[in-house]
Image (cartoon, rainbow, N blue to C red; front, side, top):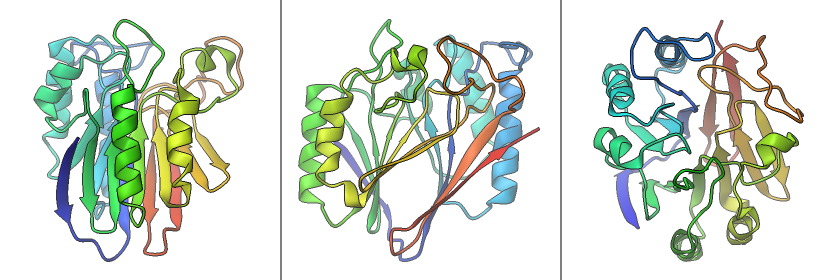
Length: 260
């Protein structure tokens, strides 16, 4: 487990969540009729203009569609325009080692922990090689349990790519996190101080499980229809991102912005 002390926040912690950018290998290339580099640039520009005082940007996987080096070179060319901390974790389409060359703090075989005063960001790698579903290793589950047990006074923002709960779309639920129960058993012991954020589903999701808040954000490119039996794009929904603010009393304020 790698731990980083970044600063000592006494006020609210504010960040933007962007996910499933699905960058391809060439700047002019499109995916499902969308230029994913252009859509990412538009989402980033809008988020920074609207929220110029955020503390960081959080990307929860599927940075790349191809897993090729060229796609991460595109990613670097986009994010290097912004002087703001950026945190990433891999998705099922990603190459974790290539992603770590761009964002060295991206998690692989261990969790990554970043402290912001009384709040912490915990990054988990749920990628399973050559599979679309996800899994958290036993090693990382033990690390997470140990950390949460020793830091019960922290408010913990836990980020993962694959959904740790069912989202009521059977095709998506088949490729979610296969050890959802194990992860939630660990987190639920400390859920009064936890926000769980994920990607993968290309749709807006906000659920309260007892004291645990779960949030997913639409993709920065294309979206999936909710409550669908089969893979089905929501062509009427444009790219999006989510703003999240955590105040001193641990009240979560969040809003999803769709970008035409």
